[in-house]
Image (cartoon, rainbow, N blue to C red; front, side, top):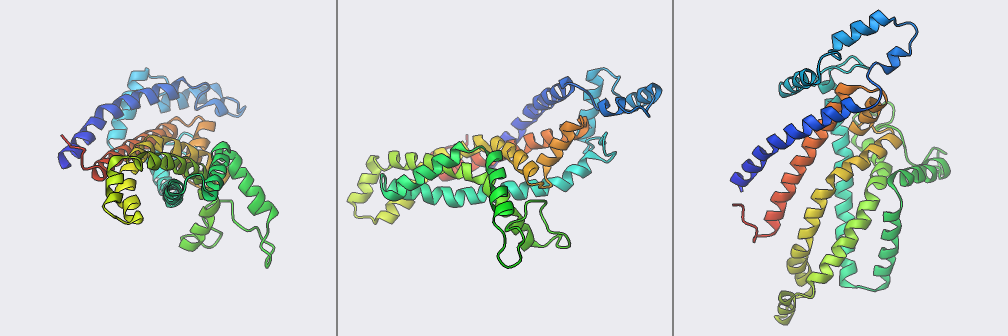
Length: 324
């Protein structure tokens, strides 16, 4: 497995190189430019704009600009934000933990609910529980994440109040209350609504997928053999059926990771969560090229790393997979 993991890591080098070229060209091809706002400022003269363009290297040929950006990135220097005049690596390092907290918590909540729901629905198909979960999951899949986020704000921040204090039931801005920075319980309290908005649709999707996969596996010969040997139902479901039924789900999760990060962009914007999604949105509005490139490149690296972890987990769950 170590050789396979090393080989997969080496394969990411040309992939990341191609991604970096495409990202650089796409960002440069976007309408407008990093000095759009400055050009509208009557207090900045044409000579000053030309001096800023020269300082930022915007007049250099694209290959030169790309080579400069790539060289800096390989040395850990992602450049300086045009808007905030701060090192991009410093800005991103402040936001990455917050995004990982949000995505990680949503991922954990998704699995904690989706797997038991999928198993119970498969154990008792067409039962009241199965019909109820089918209805709930269809609703969860049908509601876009931004609508769900706004709905949760209306219900739990605007409409329902704390009966003792009259304050909103759940906070909807930032990741800590004022004066409680670093308080874990306060952070968990702020996570409830963003995590709910981000994970509900995935719970619906994965529980339905696992239910179908479990039903297929339960009709296999080895399941009938296990039952014929007198094994308890719980042992048959959790030892034999689940281990094989969950394999397609692992692959699906790996493919869905980019969508999970994309969903985090909306959630961070709606709930003012100080993560990379919010940073990306602010950078996109201000055409802050260095920040845009840094955030998207780091997101691509995270997605590739998560895919490698998913492949290794797939092999761990399925002993038939050979790492050759």
